Image 1 (cartoon, rainbow, N blue to C red):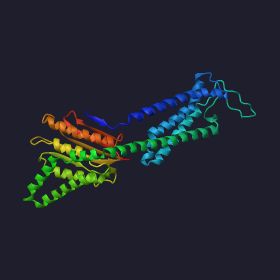
Image 2: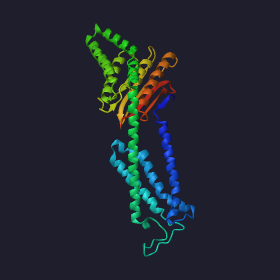
Image 3: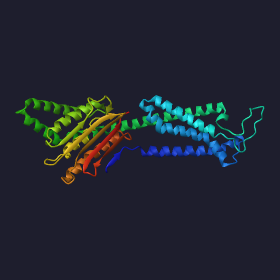
Image 4: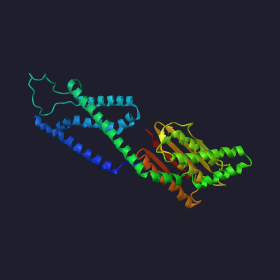
Length: 362
């Protein structure tokens, strides 16, 4: 497997986030020594660890929410899962706090007239209720902070993509018109329609209507930032119907498309690239050829899998053309779905060419 490409995150943002996290942990590791100001002395390393429990568990709750729960559940309209997971998480950290509650080595004595007697050793049954309440409140604040910061980050990423789309709009539009529906396909489609004019005029008329729909979609939708997924499905289906008419009889063509497709919004003219590439480079006259296409939507993701026969020694120039089209698609995905897509393509061990495109739509 080669030519594996996947959207990345902004390097500067990663570096600044790492610096902030390092500074936060330096402060947390120094917090136990602030206990000197309240008269508590750290005599043993275990005392230091005991004073670290609360800030470390608060940060653990924050990280679990920021990097996992908020993105996986809350932003995908699964609020109940988010709430339940946090209830379990808070219960676990409170259990840990209670189970490890033991007195410090040099804790200052508390007069009996001020506080009730405290057992010499801590445990689940010895943890005061108000400490559990305060800890839980701190954990809830950590969850709220994670939600706010994650939403701010998503807004920043979306705003960055929007600005990049605006700056690259003209280039992307020209690239669409250049790379999609290439003249080779249009020539074959028109030639095929012409051959049916005398023998089967109804078939020729239907094919011409399909070709007009393809051209209309390419011209009208390519300048839009997003279209409905069902429109893309209809576009792909029309293309396959027209391109399939020119395939040799022994070609194995299998197509799996949703009918009719959802109204999920997606950038236009993305999935046509690997599909067109398969028809253009995956079939040879006199050779056993196949094209397998799967386009589906599943749990907030759109997946396009295309496999076709491969002839690496047939024409090296065409092999280069194949890579150029897919590399252009990769650059467009970087702008439109940075960090929210997976794109892989290449030749497998059994000389089968494949492409796999997965886009997060939520």
